[in-house]
Amino acid sequence: MNEQWTETRLLEYIGQIELPDAKLAQVAQAHSDQLTKPPGSLGKLEAVAAQLAGITGRLWPDLSQRTVVIMAGDHGVCEEGISAFPQSVTPQMVYNFLQGGAAVNVLARAAGANVACVDVGVAAELEHERLISRKIMHGTHNMAKGAAMSRMQAVQAIAVGIEVVESLFAQGSRMFATGEMGIGNTTASAAIVSVMTGISAQQAAGRGTGISDTMLEHKAAVIKRAIAVNAPRVDDPLDVLGKLGGLEIAGLVGVIIAAAKLHCPVVIDGYISTAAALIAAALAPSCKPYIIASHQSQEQGHVHALAALGLAPCIQLDLRVGEGTGAVLCFHFIDAALKLMQEMATFASAGVDGKHADQ
Ligand SMILES: O=C(O)c1ccc[n+]([C@@H]2O[C@H](COP(=O)([O-])O)[C@@H](O)[C@H]2O)c1
Ligand SMILES: Cc1cc2nc[nH]c2cc1C
Image (cartoon, protein in one colour):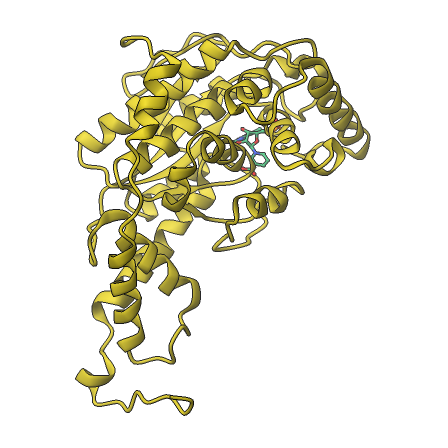
């Protein structure tokens, strides 16, 4: 473990996040308006290209080196019977990521992305040469009975995310996707989303890995109990994260914050990643313009979580696997947006009459 992070150090780090370059984003949009298409007709692809220019400070950023960071952690709340799968699947899937056989590995290879897998809190001893071992604790405590972790542990897990991204950046990565693995983490995410957005536990609870109607009702009751037992303070994101969070969710908070600090786009995945984004945005509002929402998950609370962040997802494929799958898929759209900006002819260069009837 590297040097301990204090809350003050974290807030100082957050204070260094700069706003994106709004002028360059405007220049990118003006260029887009010169391309041979009706203005705005490439929709979100145009908006993303302008956002990338603002984030990176370059009209044609080189984002070819990109990494999906998979944070793995376990959840004490599993003892309440809220998942369709046993906790042992978390370490087993970590080895699957490291061997390259999971859905996210296949999609990452197709999108030219590296996979970085981090043990931030798996409840088993893991050893592998490619594993980034930064375990804070062996899974969280059961949030239905008390705090999932201490405030200090939440800060340390955020610091893991920051340090991992700083190190990947030093190795050349310029775009990040958030991924995670943790049996039980849709319960922790739902609790966070419920507190941060004001939706009920029933609205926030989803089927996760595929639970029955009866289990879904029980899961909502567990989430409600966890919120009542812990009484998290909604205006204190570290309090919410410590009491209801997962270690991998905290790790992803750090990933988002560090990407913003380093002027890199960070593409968020499904429900768990968006719960992390809600905490990150509350802790560091300046990181919000660096976030790109990839997809809308099947988890019923996801649409509310994205709306609370003011984010619209790029795609809707009914995914609910997590791992960073949807975020990595979104890299293809980002590549497409940049290629259009760079390779399309302008009205002037192609001799196409670009005068709009209303002008
Ligand atoms: O990303 C999502 O929206 C998503 C939705 C449902 C399930 N998951 C994945 O499934 C696991 C959590 O499901 P559960 O039922 O154990 O809470 C965890 O490893 C997540 O990566 C992920
Ligand atoms: C098999 C399996 C793979 C996963 N990937 C992310 N969460 C998962 C949960 C399960 C159960």
